[in-house]
Image (cartoon, rainbow, N blue to C red; front, side, top):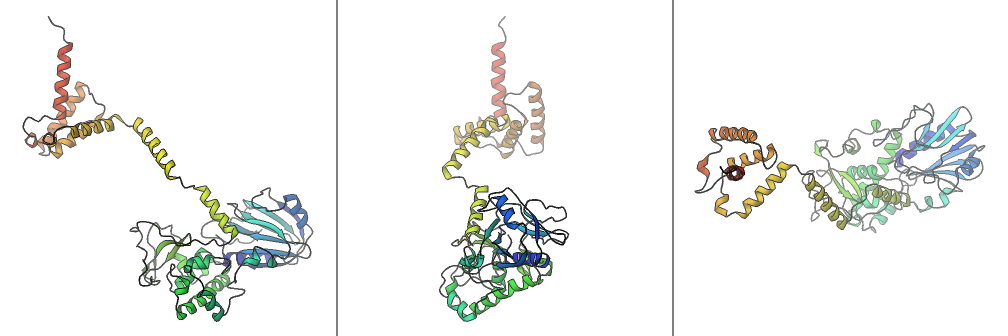
Length: 435
């Protein structure tokens, strides 16, 4: 999702192309999930005729200040983006913003400004929020945010005092927007990699030297990403960012070291075990492919909006209750049983019958069992004489190859084929009329 660097890139885009320009027309999508607290027609009336004075940001929140009236408040959610017509759009790793067609797909707000400038705010997944608000910096949710690493990074002394009071894991702490505004999943992973800190270590367990490394990384990573205008192709080549987006289909490498993944703070976390070593006594993450389950530290929502986003994501793939899973499993089993091919049913009946027989009688050769499996795969329980002949020839070939021989049978033991042939012969004799 858009984090501090991406939102700052959008703020700069709006400031660069819209400052000093008057909004001639505004179009607002009829989407009461994204457009919050105001009807589209009222938001349209509030925007038209206003002149853009300045664009602001704190953390992941951005707002546009006008010459008069309330500000246009934007939270980007998971797929929010600002697009200026004719200007190359910022591209994210997890979703694409297409500004080639106008208006862009999934637009929520369209503004036509003086100087033939067109600005659009779009959001595909509808987790973004658009509001009107007076002085956003002094009101919630912005007033509840912690320090912004780019705008208001605390001194090392103040930062150290705060860290030593925190009992949470580092990753969960960094994701808490009340602690550090704007740090999201990828920025937090990059910060911890650059500081060489294990994601699950408790904040109050850090040494003074580690706290200093963390302070430097929290300041450096967002500033470097902002300087590159959130263009990942311009990020330093040694960053974890470049190898964390492979979907975990294979184990990525960074500077010759494997990158692993685990759950911390409710989020998938990328880290490099060789660099970010778990403290002694802590359980290190198992290499990918060998982990028995995902470990989860205490989960701290990044903000009210992001807590809602996580809730909506959970609604998309709802976990099935255990009782429901059992019911569903039984239903599936019943359906599968009804749809089982005759061959599978034959196998099951033969296996059941074999269990009921004395143990001595079930000591048949592996090749004989394989021959019977081949019979089941051929079709139904009772075959025609022609099918029997074909299978007899097949069994004969197996016998000649040395894989199936009668020598493997115990005394007085007959195969399933022989028992079936005998039963069919008896039935045929009973049907022949007496002379």
